[in-house]
Image (cartoon, rainbow, N blue to C red; front, side, top):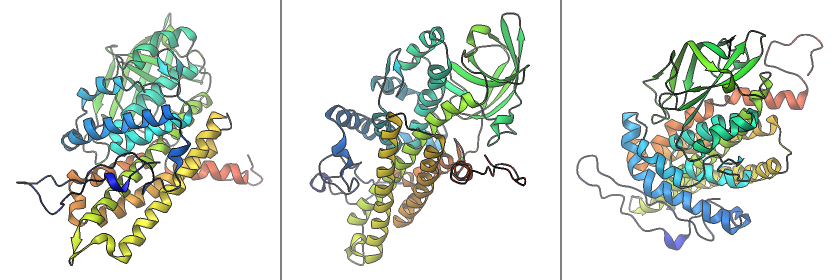
Length: 427
């Protein structure tokens, strides 16, 4: 769904570099009519409002994010200066209706996420954690009062959200979380640890998932500055370096009773949020794959070896065609999945199939694109290396490739393989 009109791609001399590291870049493609990425013209299925929104988000990423993101990524810092600019896009809240949120259809939300991810996966992840996890938790599982209190400032990005489910010893088996919540008068007292929590070091609202005295899981909105809440950035990451993933320590953290999400009763309630989030992650993978393909295509047409462009070689054309086939496959699948979501015909297995398939293909496309750029492929100026590193995290979070396969496998066979099978075991 990404358009690259032939007559608007400005030629770039990739053999000319500046002093020092140099800044040879491939010009970003622009939206237009027939193109080299949206081969089956899915963009034509969007209405004028969707197309305008898509162009606005792409322009923002190309003009405001891409030129500055590499130094932040290299320093492992989050570009806070971009938050007010992201707020001006009016996209925070994505599919949530009311409370200052845009109330996008799933198709519209998907196009927005694709364009964010095509530009940078750290920015799309920041938006996803804030909107698809934290805000969606409140929208789906909070009371009317909680939605009215928390969502409007989050929609304006005046308040930032985070989502604390994963623990040091419980990632894939998050259902066994150990963080506890004890009722004490008009408050709940939280104790435990969380890990890999994006936005946690600067978030105003962190949704902490904890097990109550009755054994059931609850969601608690922990507000910034609450005593006993500590978040420490996880250092040494090689992926999503701009995202401030943190280890959280909760020591007798008192949360007002009115901050317990009203409609959370079991762990299955969290799956409603995870389904919405995995849907967004699937779109992210496509956006990253498109970024790799578009850069490789532009580079191959401009870079000369043995006196002719790389694009004139048979093997290069074959590799580019395979990338395009995979992207077309993913776009067609995801557009249909988005329609099904809008029709209410969604399910965790359908979303899991998408996340499993797209992240695997995106990893392959980005690795091939990196290889096609040769030595330039490992320079941040070309952006492919950043995407290649970041896609590893996208493949893992919201459920690994293996977990998604087991979700699909359970659905199509009737047998759960998450635990060792027992004779006669079925659904």
